[in-house]
Length: 337
Ligand code: SAH
Image (cartoon, rainbow, N blue to C red):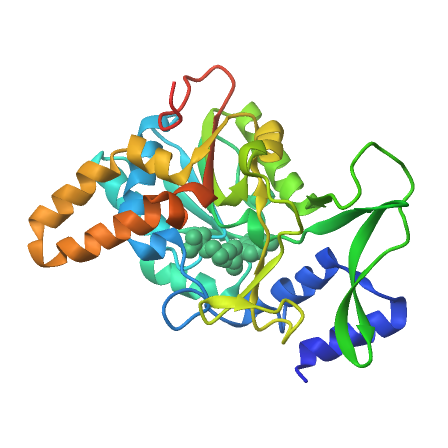
């Protein structure tokens, strides 16, 4: 059994079943044994692939967006959870063409990933938390960041809301439910709801920054709105590019949940669209054509990447984009009229 699983079991034996948020926090963020602390999980040899790792076109379209919302001649470009730094490197290449050279800040807790980022983004500043980044005009980006923060899950049982817990039974980690929580409402039995105080806090901080200094924020993640809200708990484990059991081998699989973009848009302000619609509006079709005609031997790979990023049955609809700007600034491009 891994040292992390020993720690989780010891905590459950000492204080009882733990919330899903506590379990996630230990699995992903434990400073010594957590998933993100111990590895670079991205890419072919890793557990999952993100949009910037699929194709440079993703970051380039975000670069076009950043260039069009840049709030001042001099601004900070901040990214939350930058992974390998691929997205930032692609954005900076586009900005360079527009002769924009923002001061780059990467908010990252993982030493393994900071090392990867330093390779691709040589002149960056690093911070553990957004609060550590100085105030001032800024554009803030986050791709698959919120879904890595701990989430609480609640089931509406016959006798009220109960929180989903991780406990021990017959020597195995197992799902359970808390006693009914105080407070009643009209939710139907069997309904699930999820809440991430850390994600909410991150969005509140972004909103406060946009209120204090001119700027813009773009949040991209796996998630839903009222139009495609799933009916169940959304926690998912990924290992070796396949779904895994979230209770099996804690700290060895990525754990994510689906972001509620209606909730995020309320917290941050701004508009939500799908990744497919956003990338199309920013010109990914023309960019794919240009790349394919510049290197005909790459045309097939470019077409595949375009399909993966934008097709409804791939990432085009499941991934959502939330864009927000400071009060008084013109609406950002990419979100329809
Ligand atoms: N945006 C990247 C990586 C997504 S994976 C991409 O699209 O490829 C999630 C990222 O968030 C990783 O870089 C991880 O180390 C980072 N991360 C997770 N929790 C964090 C936290 N609490 N604070 C800062 N970074 C965090």
